Image (cartoon, rainbow, N blue to C red):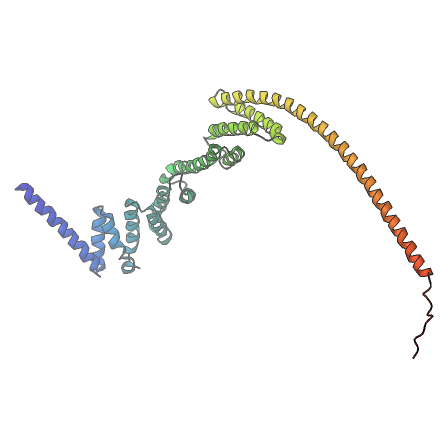
Length: 331
């Protein structure tokens, strides 16, 4: 019986609340709508509160209630995880109500909304970059605020997300065996994030990429790429001593040094072959040139003879008089 009564009471309460919400949604009474919205806000019924707050801006414009409506709407959206909209509303509050004692809080919450709206590292990071800008702006405007104490931590966290995305993008080139682009991409990561904690791993990927690039290089670039990989292996060993990455660099350097010795043998043999081939080609070219010269002389001689014969014919034609007329037709 007791459970039955409680059930009826709960249904009655829900019906009453629903009835009040419906009445407020249909009402034109500013005070009633505002009271119902604030009641919903206090009860953490964010969607109901927002539905009513959305009806109030024009009704409370120019009144003391305007700031509260914007402020509560922003918090309701924040708690309802509508971070982008909440951030916009908090920022709008700080810009519009400059004399309000809650301006600093609104500015902080705006930055926090952008922080919470930052996407995962493997997605578009426009929201992350925007969040960093908002947090830095708050730090600039309120450097001595109690709320500023954790701002740098939040910025570092977001910055690392950008670093990690760039790192993962560079790593994709390595997985595709595009070793030249691997080195370039990781160099860009180090240039953009010189203090990155991922430097050891980046060095490891770069070392391996340079090693494989040298191993699989075309003949003309092989020696240069071996030297480049050797130099980088020494850099890794120097900057990361007594680490697994330094050990890998040393192991690869030993292989590269052997590769260089083997390549010198191949290079010497190849240069000798090229020299022999070049000499043969030179002799053949000289022979062909002599042959072409003889043929050209023969052509010129034949052409001159033809010209001489033509001149003789032309001269004979000029010296021979036309035949005289010896017969006339009688009329």
